[in-house]
Image (tube, rainbow, N blue to C red; front, side, top):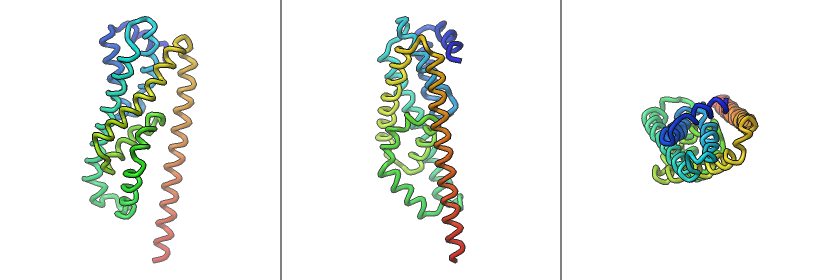
Length: 205
């Protein structure tokens, strides 16, 4: 997969390469299956050919990723106001929502910082940051910092391991699969715990 992407991107002009990197970095927050991390690694392998630069890629991908993050933030804010906070989901009580608000306002910014290191959860984090009304500008800055740190690692690996792209793709894919499995397990655990708690509450009535 990586070699096919490289052969295509390598035929593009530097400006188009930057646009491709911008597009995929932005898209990943809105459409999580987007192979943005792979594209960033592929783009970084072209640095050795002097087609593009390390710093421009790092800044461009960090800003575009933060923009995608804040877009999903506003989607979450709108959805939260129009649906969640108006009680349209019976299983989300005001008490539960208040606890979630308190949690996100206490730990939400820390979650944003590490969110880039959790593939498959990025759109979820940005969405719920909006639902729980974290400060937009602070959210954008933290998302940019998170993207900057993660992309710096990806670009560095791409430069260093440009001749072993199949190996990079293999381990990056395994990393994403492990994180997705852990995330799915956590969500199922929370849902089961909530179901038992609700069932117990109904039995005591």
